[in-house]
Length: 113
Length: 113
View 1: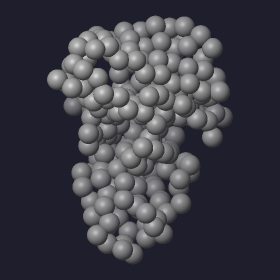
View 2: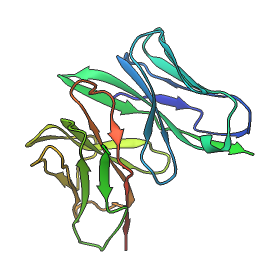
View 3: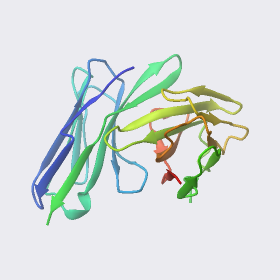
View 4: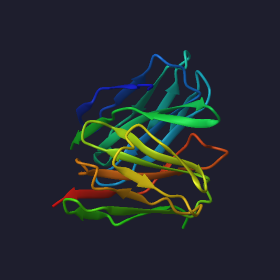
């Protein structure tokens, strides 16, 4: 099946620092999604990207749909303790009339106050 | 409040026992999904259903069964054939229009006694 290579797998940062994580693939996708998962909870959608080159912000979060449609990145500016969690990228493609969504392995973010 | 409700939050299974995880949504979504989450492995698709009375196997369907008798409900049974059932199980749903955006429940943690 399709694979998304998400990196880094984990990171420790100081409160106030900016964070960057990305997802790459050898396949082309029509949608890129970024989710955040708090411990013991389900993932929550942060940003959805629909067009190649699209740059979208949600508060301190910014994500971009790569121009090749094979990658995406998520930036978090001025991190705060509640940013702690696992961030997943996901990408969707048409598969026989069904939108098949593939998830990355996740980036575990720890913020040191 | 619209959303996806998973129950129970925690479940224990004895060896040789079948257990059923509940997933209910009031978002009027056509499609529903079950994922298994293990540490460091991201989300793996167990089963999905695009419409009532129809469902398809995902990447790791062995040892699991589902039904979709109502639009709102997509229960997952972990059978005794699943030899390593300990994991965090996530249910999701998506609409026909934004089929590539999946909304998740809070998850059920299944452990073996």
